Length: 125
Image (cartoon, rainbow, N blue to C red; front, side, top):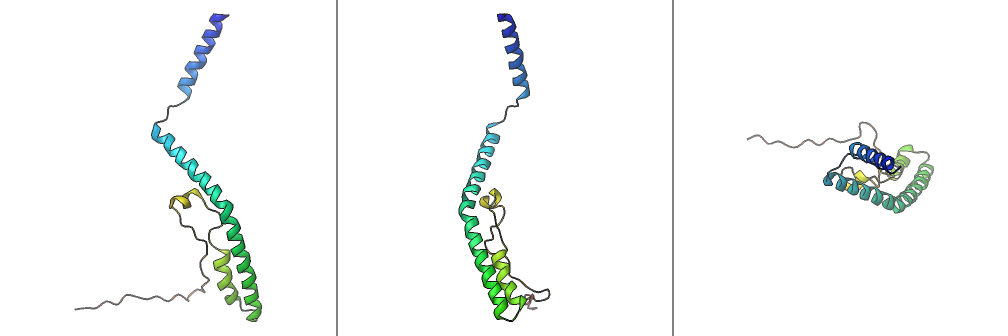
């Protein structure tokens, strides 16, 4: 029986050594860093998401009041709704690492064709 246990243990050991690849230290450090960023994103979202929800709720209410007080002017309401309801809602590890921007406030509403293009002045000598 002892020989059989030793043989099974040896075979299992060889299979595990062959099946499990050895990772270099740099790879494990990268995984630890990614884990740290993921945990930081979760912790940051605990505070960020409620703040964003308050901002968006306030913007939704104020935008609705703006729409009512301007006699149904949708553009006035959208100028409030777009920044407050748009933007980043959940922080990701890429955002905390600086690879993607964090936009607490979204873009402002602009009708097509409203953008003013300013061309640089070129002086010829």
